[in-house]
Every structure is written in structure tokens, then in C-alpha cells.
Amino acid sequence: MSKNIAISDDVYRALKREKGDRSFSDVIRDRLEDGGKLADVTGAGVLDPEMQESVKDDIEQMSRGTLSRSDDEAL
Image 1 (cartoon, rainbow, N blue to C red):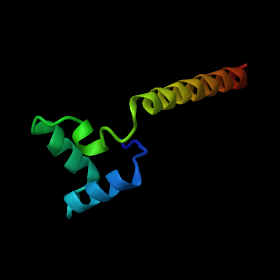
Image 2 (tube, rainbow, N blue to C red; image 1 turned 90 degrees about the vertical axis):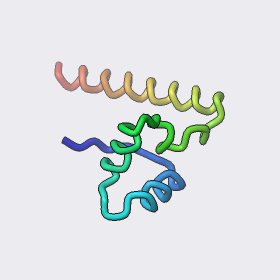
Image 3 (spheres, rainbow, N blue to C red; image 1 turned 60 degrees about the horizontal axis):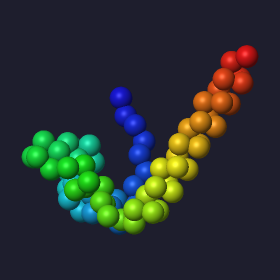
Image 4 (cartoon, rainbow, N blue to C red; image 1 turned 135 degrees about the horizontal axis):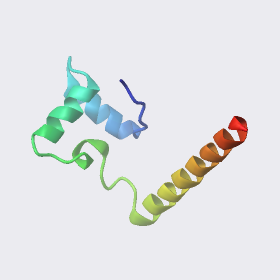
């Protein structure tokens, strides 16, 4: 099963350079299995802490809106 994720353009370029003929999943999996952190391949520190909290809040609000709409459609 595949999932879509959003990454910044600079992180995409870094992953693309590193991947060669491998998939992006392989690059990330290898980095995690080598004891790395997901942040090593996702651009940790790209957002300052205040912006990070703002983004998290926005995501939570959008998620609640999606759940609310799906509940309305089920009725």
C-alpha cells in the first residue's frame, strides 16, 4: 500500500539525489534502519518552532473538518 506525503522542494531534491535507481521508500527505509531518524531525511529544522505549532494546529483543524463532513454525509 502506498501513501502520499508532502515534503518541501529542497527535501525532495535531496532525496532524489540520494535515491539513484532506488525508490524513495527504499531511501527512507534504509536511513531509518541504519539507526537514523526520520528527521534525517525530511528536513528537520526547516520550520521554526512557532511555525511548526501553527502548521500542526492547521492540520488538526482540517482533520476535524474532514471528519465532520464525513459524519454529515453518512446521515
